[in-house]
Length: 337
Ligand code: NAD
Ligand code: WQD
Image (cartoon, rainbow, N blue to C red; front, side):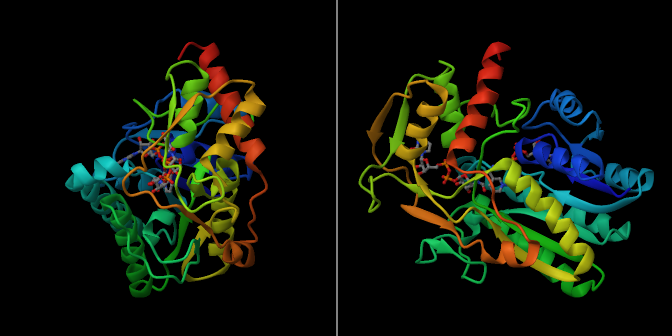
């Protein structure tokens, strides 16, 4: 049985991927410093899979700990989720982001090479494209991220690409996620950010629970059918499967690959609200307000490469994304969290 090190495995996308890996027959070792997650997620993973991953609480920048993990376990590949992801905070505290996301990835990569682990899957983001001039993003389009967070992702992609060239044994997949939403169908794991959410679906979830009063819909004058922004929302379980397929791909193929993970079908903010209201029976009051700085009207994935090379295609549509988000939030509400 192969063992995969999952950095950031206690986080939102990481925890769903740990479930998919364990369901797919992998052993999992998690390294997470819990700066944006809670230990309780391990109990939830145990409930879902009847199997608990090995857990190390610590930082990807801790070389000694990394070397201990590689000595203690026969790791065959690494999926690297650990990172900071708040766009606004990345602008106000750039060094924190370059240190955590870029320096952290370099330390991890150095230790991986030392330990002769040859497979690396990296959480990148559609944000690396910036504003390429077309709404449908394809992997070979120019990249020009417009914020520090996006630049950290692009830098790590480039560092990995250069390292794969210099180390012919190293196999790398950079996965560019679009807008991950939803939760595991058990409702046991999902996205529950610390503090007021920046992203649309956790904000809607907290309104449904009565924690937040109303949603601000940022911009209603975009050149889109209903005037609100269009995004390629992707169910987190589809995303998780994409990582398992990326590992399969790397087993057969050397070199480095960069792949979009999105559905290719965008939805507007008002469509997300209406669908959430329909599946939850909860009213989501909202106000149409000014555009949010840095937002684009519309972007979505060309997901052809993911289908061609990974055999991956998103299965879950907007209703399932909203149903699963609501199941997760209603269970949180029942626990009084
Ligand atoms: P998350 O914050 O829920 O998970 C990240 C995890 O990494 C957390 O558990 C956190 O405690 C841990 N972590 C952060 N820095 C660490 C460090 N230095 N050492 C050890 N652990 C550390 O975020 P997520 O939404 O699950 O995102 C996972 C990855 O996917 C991130 O790299 C993020 O940039 C990327 N990504 C996320 C989205 C999104 O919209 N959620 C979109 C594209 C890419
Ligand atoms: C979605 C839509 C908003 C909140 C971000 C990051 C990106 C990637 C995914 C990591 C937009 C609108 C939102 C609200 C709103 N993350 N909205 N009211 O901005 O597309 O992408 O997450 O890599 O890098 O930038 O996601 O969920 O914030 O917004 O009207 O309170 O919802 O304007 O149209 P975004 P989001």
